[in-house]
Amino acid sequence: MAFIFPVKTETEIKEILNSIRKEHHIANHHCYAWRLGADKLAFRSNDDGEPSNTAGKPILGQIQSNDLTDVLIVVARYFGGTLLGVSGLINAYREAAADAIKNSQIIEKYVQFEYETSFTFEHTNAVMKILKNAEAKIISQNYDSNCIIKFYIRKSLSENAEQQLKKIPVININYLKTM
Image (cartoon, rainbow, N blue to C red; front, top):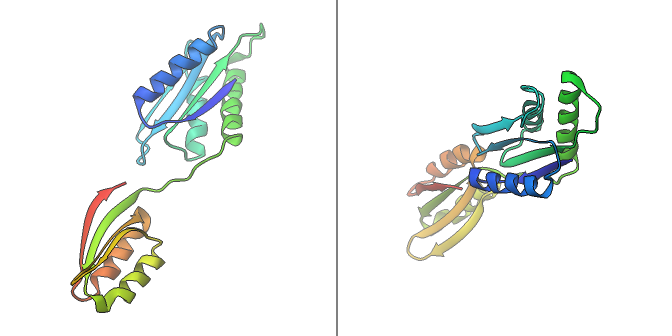
């Protein structure tokens, strides 16, 4: 049985693993792999008693080949009396992970940067056109003596939008944080 979970922290992963182990306590093995973060640098796999690299690594391979992050896949294996051998185990765990991914709804998220920009009212149309073309999400707008807009923009589009905004006279653009 394969299970897939969206996760954000290692603490959350440990809680889910404990829950799966309790729920499927008769299973001989609870092999898993996970990967966290937009940079995809935090990951781990576990064979849970299976021969080295026959379970966790194939599961992690499916996570990597599908370019997923913030995900945990657990495969609970009940021994049915048939010895699969090393290649059989690798194929079984890989296919179980692939099926879990295939039967899941993948949510695509982007790293976003939050900005605040200020400009004079006469440049409103130019600023709004740049933000629209960059698919920015406006958080707040203020049109007093100086216009101020806070917005989110996808990381991959931020550099170009920032350069475009800096071309507008009397504009100030400040990076606030990463989302």
